[in-house]
Length: 368
Figure 1 (cartoon, rainbow, N blue to C red):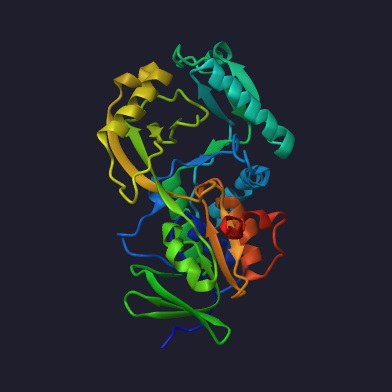
Figure 2: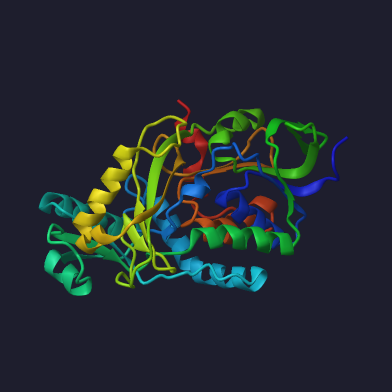
């Protein structure tokens, strides 16, 4: 016997699923969020907390436009979460820096960003090593140049997760935790999801936001999700005095004063263990960037699995065989949270038309 029919069922309780469930519920729709057990691979627990635009969209300028749009939506999104959940996610958008240690690397960066500026209108400026050291006196001598984009920033990712969960609960999101979906079926104008514990859930619409789990769930609804894991390791230092007012692409100072160092990109299958090699790499690069970090102690280290498509860009799709079934997968869950809740969710529930340019993100691009 299935539960009472919901307007929308979101499968996946990470940042992507939470953002969509929150956005759908804000339209007044009865929303159920299904989260797996603690053994599920969860990219959200390993994210870096960046809202990052510069460099996004090389090879698909529409992704650059989509990312920039989300970054611009973030202030209103953060304010909405504060009103709904009474939680400050510590949003800061002072702009962000990419730092280079090689002249050729910096010139290559300039060429790429100029192309993105022309194709997607993403603002940036290049700076020399001397200019960067005037802005960040603690910067090491090995940095020869870099780029800056005013759209970049960061948040506290743990507070973001908690805010999305709390806000969703307060506006009526029903959470079903501790058991993963093992089967999906469309019958009688409804979608049925059978959980591992035997429970049967029913909804008029369904969203697959299960990260790496989408690979197995998508074909059940005529969708295509060729996702693979990519391991990223992260380090956290003890707290120190404020010295870094803007995030960089590999290092940021949190609102609590600690330094977050990241991240590696490793083809390690589904192994989400930390490695001594990865930690040494992160620590060495951090000290080369800011030598004063050498005196700080590392207090935490962890790893997580990114959800990567073959070309690195998101998949947003509605099933042609089962209208009302949607697939959402990406590896920039923090950056895209704002647009997922504010733009994607209303389309999914039928409260708004399809976003402009959404077709380029269809999973059909991988079917030969």
